[in-house]
Length: 483
Image (cartoon, rainbow, N blue to C red):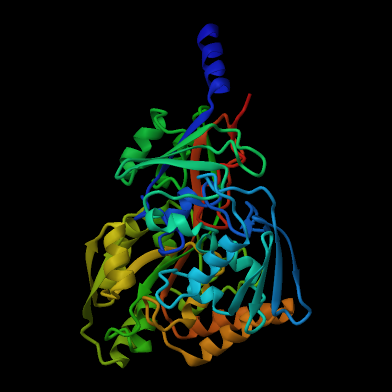
């Protein structure tokens, strides 16, 4: 028995690689041209880096820019780049690459999902190989924050042709292989400009089925399952000394997204009826086994500017029925409910459909894969209702884009976000963010469900994993096996 324990301990000490499991596979590997957070889940910080970056606590720190200066009027950002940074193909990363990457976001045919975040950038100037100057058309208090997103990572012009299959970045790991529907393999970048990763290799495996996820962890076929999809199994892992369970917060506002331009959801009374038909706690308990924080607007409860507006859309099925009658729909109506693969959507959708049925709304469920959801729902806007968790950090600004998939068009809200973006005073920004939360709650734009908890399972010997998810990332740069 003692020999077996010693052998197991030696095996853990000797391990230099990691197998990470995720539920969602990326549709491709270019974080700068898709809305899928699954891309960042594999590549953020590991393969690709930006001028700034997020840390585990949500703070923004220097990345490929070692420092910066901001002009007094807030219109000029001058970034000093790190010297000696190379891409994984051996080419030098310099100011020309930064200019190319940021200019590429802003081109007319850009596919960047967060293009609006960078709209204030009017020019990007190469001062010298290690200095870049950004000139803004108006002050933007979020610019350093926005540049930390995966959508703003720095890429080389010569890598673009094959970036969706062969990503080339500057990060602590290099891409090796993508076996679609199975795995993505990375190896340590021994030419990394910063502190070398301890791990020598990482394999990301994609396991969408919760039952298969449980089996893979129990069999130790994977070392770490980020955002484990079956929360009902977590107590079993907590009781098993082989594992550690990490429970933290995410930026994921989980919502019943509503197509605001599709009748009858173009009527605010109907959207309000839907909101009052939903029992958030029943969804959290039934789909997430208690993991999740109720929300009444599109804002993270851990943010200091958060306003608790859950009472404004409290569960009240009788009120929901009365609102439908007021809207001329006393007999109810039928609509579609598209559910992507995550457990919060598939399990939560069944509960929500039953709740809506109680007030006369028949939601016809269609389960779709992630690629289908992105194509039909997100890009095609072909839906009545859908469930998704928006995992981008502090992204209430998406409601200022009338072309965004839920098609909310409010000029007053758009003006407020424009003012927010140009405001740098912290107290004023807090007030404006709170006002923004109230507006979309008053308009019942979507059904606000809960803030997604970050529940992950890992081998007990692993250290350096993020408990919280300030962005959708599986940052392995500081992960190691305990000795």
